[in-house]
Amino acid sequence: MRHRRKGRQLGRSSSHRKAMLKNLATGLFLTLRDDMFYEGLYQSDGKTPVNPPKHKGRVTTTLQKAKEVRPLVEKCVTLAKKALPHIEAADALNTDADRGSEAWKAWREGDGWQKWNAAIAPAINYRRRAYALLGDKEAVSILFDDVAPKFADRPGGYTRVLKLAGVRLGDAGAQAVLEFVGENDRVKQAATAVKPAFVDDAAEEEKPEAAEEPATEEPAAEAADTDEAAAEETTTEEAASEEKTEE
Image: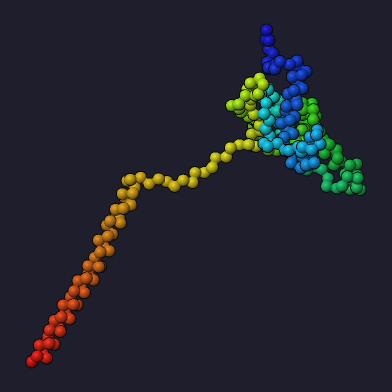
């Protein structure tokens, strides 16, 4: 019975399982490399170029492995976050002089270096602990330089596990995606559709137009009446002029 022995064995010995989870966590951090790193890299045949990952900050593995490696990744990010205040304090005490110059030598021999050394010591300790968990210096550098500042204001939950619908070919194992939060999030687009017009709203909009129609017709009717009156006056004037001529 496996009393008080938490975690999945994954069909491997303890040493094999630890090495596998360490490599998986390291691979997740290495996906955040800059694209310039892959320029000039070729596969073992020497012809096929090595392309950067399609989605940075994401690895695809089995569901059980993703759930097991997630606590390891979360612990590494937490260690890097704890080192951020010490790194900021050490940067404030560091000198801008070039290494090996007279100003740098004077700073190195004075009290400035002692204060800087005391401020940076906890950060170095956290970096060494992270290296013991990952075993890769490049992954540790990416962790402390890129990943930790992104999650400085986040209290936890730096990764997510998303189960995929498709299974792995060969053994039909359940697959999942382990990725950092904020790297491949779906952004909701604002709705740009026009508000639909209902029957009641359309009827209310047509009422003022119907009331204004008689007002537009009245000036036309008045104009017609004035034209008729003017025509009658002209006819009466012509008749009167004709009578005078006959006399």
